[in-house]
Amino acid sequence: MRQAVETNRQKANIAQILPFASDNLRMSNEEFQAIGEIGAMFYEQGNLEKAQTIFEGLIEISPDSDAAHSALGALLTKRRDDENALIHLNKAIELNDLEIAPFVNRAEVYLRQQRFETAVADLKRAIELDPQEKDAGANRARAMVLGIYQAIETQKAQQNNFNLKEK
Image (cartoon, rainbow, N blue to C red; front, side, top):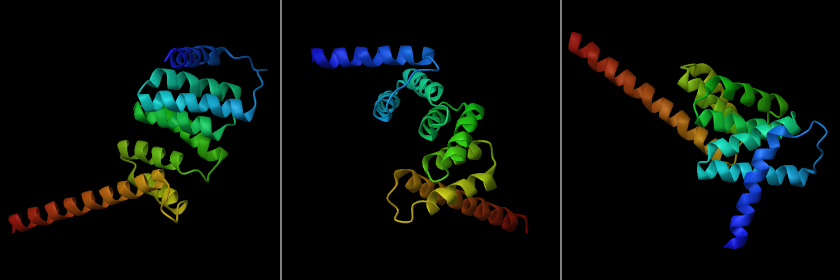
């Protein structure tokens, strides 16, 4: 128990240090990944402030990390900070257009903005990237497409009922 508390203190200290990291800070891929996993842990626990601090710090350390941009974009999508989410999701896709998550998160933002054609294009791309239907993000995209389809069908049915009542 004491070790777990100490580990959590160390993780919190990392979260405070990252935004102030020097441009010359060097770390191994394993260290970078480990810090990203700490950010993901905070995200999953709902501690979005600490997760955001970590993801922003990782971007400062490695501005060309598609994973860091994708993670920050996902967090900002969850926070409904759509304009900033799009900045990071677009950057993640620009750096690596074979990752599914940024397409799905960007589609969510586009749906909120009622940019339906663009959202559907992103969902289609996410689904294409997962032909074996194993990726959770692509499966979320499939569910979103189904939801869109059902909404369209409901709207059509309501319009047909309205038209019948007018006759």
